Length: 180
Image 1 (tube, rainbow, N blue to C red):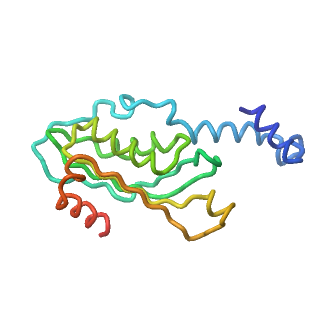
Image 2 (cartoon, rainbow, N blue to C red; image 1 turned 60 degrees about the vertical axis):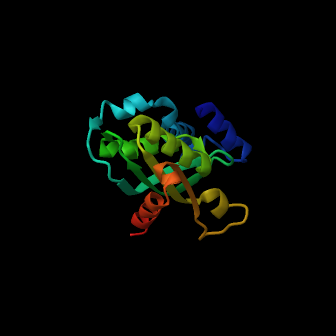
Image 3 (cartoon, rainbow, N blue to C red; image 1 turned 45 degrees about the horizontal axis):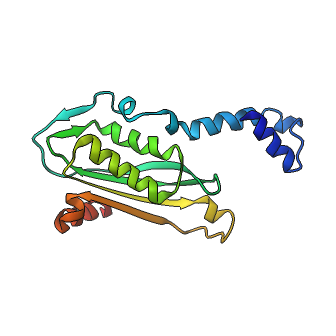
């Protein structure tokens, strides 16, 4: 990747050998590897056995999980927060694992719509939940820094699976809890 970043700097008309840019290809490659580390993670690594038996059947919600991803169309960041709820069906997942699942999917080239579905489907499948709801609210630098240059726009996406899709009371409970 370093070679390609050097070529990009040259294509921009800059001198990759000048003092401020001399190590930029190496730093940029390292940053890109970090920002896309989700490609090298698996759900089994993330979970690390943190599924636990429960008789709880009430909704569990984790709000305001910070989210950083790269738009697959422009390779520019989108930044926001993710709210995840699920209704257990005999198992609960370790709290930090929910945030790690969000990160695993976000640390790939993405569009927000697909990211929302991937997070919801993973939690639904892994926990065997009765229902899952995921909402992402994010600002996209591809829309803020270029193109239409709208600084205050926020994109919201949601995916409801199982009980949260089928039962209006469960869905309403999720949406109400996210607002508070």
